[in-house]
Length: 464
Image (cartoon, rainbow, N blue to C red; front, side, top):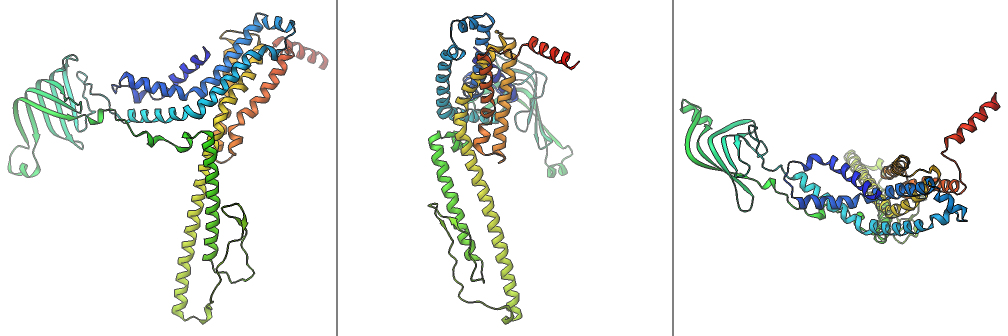
């Protein structure tokens, strides 16, 4: 129950965010249902931990509130034995969450991205409102006095055709009918008993007295291209990110491959740089660097065949040598800058892969951790229902969510290593869960206001 409640609110949040992109575009119900299905799948990593936390607080809060937990303890059962049946269920749920996060979530992610992109690119549907100018067809403004939504019949049609901001043609008609082509790519307005006012070009204006040409018609057909109003299915490969589509085994293989490539590129670069710089000191040696196999080696430096002294050069040779040196320095500088950018890009790519690898496990572990927070917390507060448990569940889930987002952002910025950033919420909440479990097992009145009142009253008396 709590899972579907959480899913409902998260889906409503998504709809509120994209409401402007969805309204007024005449989307088919099948498209909206498909979008909601994939979006719901991507929200499971948020809804599932919240559901486990909330339901465990409610369950053990109900048991404690009705003294059932006390009766179980009085019969010789410890809190851990009482928690054991639900713990087995949560472990099974955690394994299912890992499978989902490892194989199904990546597919849902790029599916909904492709659908929402197509919807955002789709223009609003052709919906003329009586007495209001309709401007969604490029270079046209259309207004009608009356419209029959069932037959498509129009009364009092006024059409402005314009280029840039200048009106080039005005069409008025007493009545008309809206028709669509068989493939829905074109809209045709069949107009009756009207007139057309068309602006004449500058050369024609110089010869004629009037700048507009007026013509009458008993029947005319205007065709509009509706290709921009169709929902085109984009190539889903455009929305794939390779590291998001891998399972954790493939991610580990990709990480090892990229790190080996980075090591080889670094070795090749130092080898190239050492050979491009002329070194006069015979005793100079470069630092050892690892090769593609990981072995530490010293880059080879090509021997210098001959040395030309500056004081032996003519003035023209000296000038040419300085110009050549400047060109070489600029070239080397650009090469080093490019290498640094390449190294930074590769390092970020490796970070993304490592963060995604850790993310495969964080959801399943979060389910277990939040259970050990929620179950003892419910036993301590001794309240069931949707009141107090909802407050505590919200507070602890916000803590989990903020820590998770903060860790991901610090990993993206390079401030924290992937394993620390992705597991920061677990590192903080796991000891908290252990503490609450210990307190609940020992019947601690951790949230009992009367206990704190008595403590502070005794402390106050002693101070006096």
